[in-house]
Image (cartoon, rainbow, N blue to C red; front, side, top):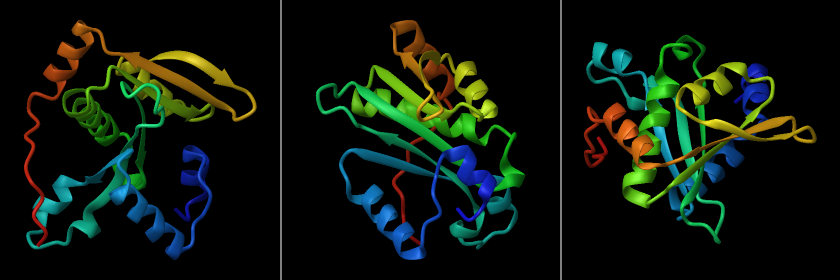
Amino acid sequence: MKSEELQRLTASEPLTLEQEFAMQRSWREDADKCTFIVLDAEKWQAQPGTAEESCMAGDVNLFLTDLGDPSLGEIEVMIAEPDCRGKGFGTEAVLMMMSYGVTKLGLTKIEAKIGQGNEPSIRMFQKLHFEQVAVSSVFQEVTLRLTMSEPERQWLLEQTSHVEEKPYRDG
């Protein structure tokens, strides 16, 4: 997160290593957050024995922020590695996280808050059927929402029918 471009695109502040570790612990332990790490599978498969960490491309997060509405989740994605951008990693990661949220957590509404200047992200979410519901000039961000009707749910399940959930094994 030392990249100024990445900070601008994600509306993030630079973190110390200690702050980054604390945030990662929070994401792992808090019941209101889900995180999937995005790996460059091509890189990982091309070099057997390569550590997962060296193949990390970014992450996708789902936040359950509204205690009064457990059917609403907020999603965000970051493809940190410049060489991995524009290759569909973000789209695939968002689709998988949306599928998880809908099928495992019972979400029926998913929102994305995106900086107004982050056109690639806005276009990606619009291609995934999200619609603009709000603009904040104060925070300079756009809120996009997808309401999961039955046709939308079927579309999502079709998009992720190739995904197989497997338990993670360390090492």
